[in-house]
Amino acid sequence: MNKNIKNEKISKIKKLLSETEYILIGAGAGLSTAAGNTYSGERFEKNFKPFIKKYKYYFPDLYTSGFYNFKTEEEKWAYWSKHIYMANTGLPELPLYKKLYNYLENSKKDYFIITTNVDDCFYKVGFRPNKIFTPQGSYKKLQCKYACHPGLYDYTKKVEIMIKNIDENNCTIPSWLVPKCPKCGGTMFCNIRGDKYFVEGDAFNYGKKKYSEFIEKIQGKKVVLLELGVGFNTPTIIRVPFEKMTSQNENFHLIRFNMDELACTIDLGDKITLVPGDMANSLELILS
Image: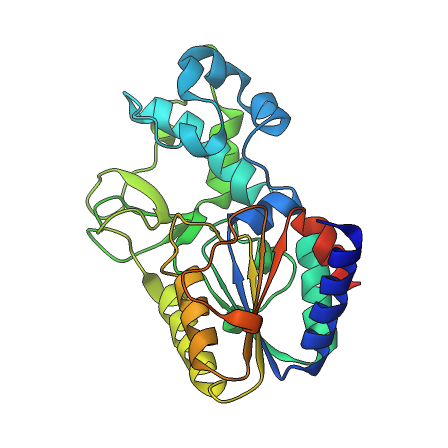
């Protein structure tokens, strides 16, 4: 983006944010990537050397390797313990998320966040549960794979134990560490939306209720919708609804940050501002 054009957009966005009554944030994988939670390159290769050696081209990055069909539960959880740790439980506070938290808290604006991310980065920097809806779940919580009951289990500590017991020659963990459903004794998996067995749970229902209340409250008000790195994997959760809300409300303005996926399904005219390229850099300028 031309430097002068970028500066003009940054100034426009700052003005929109200063004048708005409410801020609705929709966050996707692009935000976490910009913040440092990357799924490929050196970070992936450093953490998964034995797995890359064993599974070769099936393991080009963390996202793709998550679809591998492991032959045994011992193999699966050797991999998934590291996946969960790298993508969620082992993550520290990420500075970009903290800057967003400080900005929103200091702005005194009423805000809400809906995110398809399952890394819990918003919670890590201090955002309260009544301000967040995470419809896709969380990596750190496990459920019965076939949802024999609605229980969810925080596996933060157990993941660390699994990792310490990985046999890197075979990429396995001991059988006694394989998670088993406490009700049916069957397979467990991360509480992330992927099929009809996804357990929504209390946190999901609470977040959904708070999101619905916020959407109802902002009707007819002056609102800025900040869409941060939302792609096309699940566009019906954030991307499409944000466009529809903007088109249907006179005082809504959508600001879309995305590396390159800027296309809009609705002609929003001057009610949308598109910010391509390095989102971390753009947000640093806006939130400072």
